[in-house]
Length: 126
Image (cartoon, rainbow, N blue to C red; front, side, top):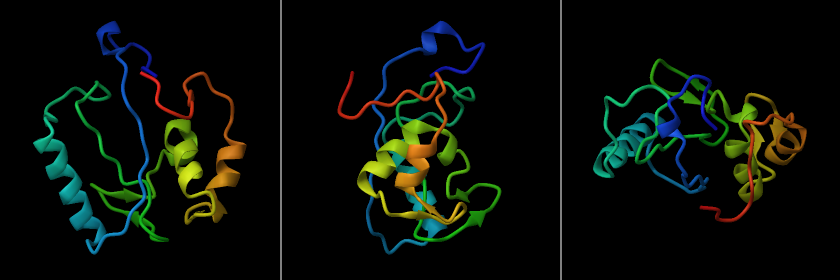
């Protein structure tokens, strides 16, 4: 799961999950909330790019909205290329239509290319 050239000490186990929910927060308010939560849980703002972190909360989608701002992109721009995003999302929301592709998550998950970096298994593995 490491990027090429990453230090070996970054190769640590982690828990990955996708959750679905409802909120009254607008997308930018939700981003602020998730960032505040990350800080409360010990995320350091100055961690090296791509390094392990205590917590990393991504907003994968927000209803059928497409948002492209400097600090917020919804749907997450890498969602269709990363099994660790797409597969669990397809498990809990298989019929959700990804607004940028106009295809449901089940179809996207079934079409993702085999890639050694795309390792996903259902259930908890630590």
